[in-house]
Every structure is written in C-alpha cells, then in structure tokens.
Amino acid sequence: MVIFGLIDIDDFTLFNLSNSFERGNYILHQFKELAKTILCPLDLRKLDADEFIFYLQGSYDENKENLTKLFLESENQLAIKISVGLVESTRIFDYKEVINQLRINILEAKKYGKNKICLT
Image (cartoon, rainbow, N blue to C red):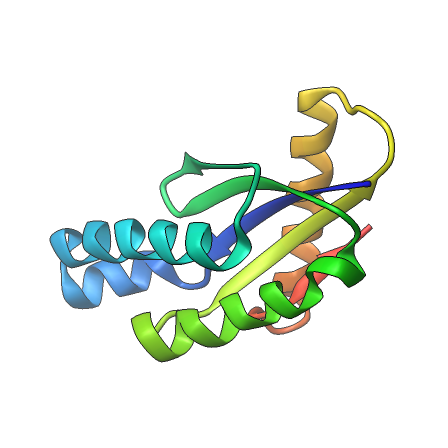
C-alpha cells in the first residue's frame, strides 16, 4: 500500500502579500523541512509555488497520526494552515492520473473549509 499526497498551503498568496515574498520563501523552506521530519516520506518535492507532492509507504490509517501532527505543527510552528489531498493505492498509477486526482482532492478539502484532508 502506498499513499500519494499533495499539500497546498492555505491562503499562501495572501500570506506573501501581507508579509513579503522573502518571508514566504522562508516559510516554504521551513515547511518542507518540517514535512520531511514528521512524515518521513519516500519522496517529497515542491510541485508548484505552494504545493508539495509526496508519497508514503503504508495505508492512511498507518500514517494518520503523522499527518495529524503535520497539521498541528504547521500551525503551531509556522502559523500556516494546509489542505491535503491523498490517494491510497495498491497499484502503480500514471503520474498524470495521480496529479489529477490529487488536485481534485485538494479542491474538495478547500471546498469544506480548508485545513482538511480529502482521501480517495
């Protein structure tokens, strides 16, 4: 079992406008390090300006505690909130298919108030 994930920092454009792009870049770097430490992903890469793609070994249930910790520590340490789209699978996906489903899941998480996880 593998979990593919996409993390989007909520309201990051507003953060940059309110704080500065330099501060925003610092937060992106700090967030990436925090995510790597907490999730211990097999891979974590910046996908877009404020999006990170990753994959984890195991099921959602096996990773739920670390995902919850990432939400809490992002807010406590960096004063940001995140939305996460997840796809849990036992088969290999086409990269474009995974990205499309993750983006759909991010939109669902944001539709219900942001700072949420949407799993399919």
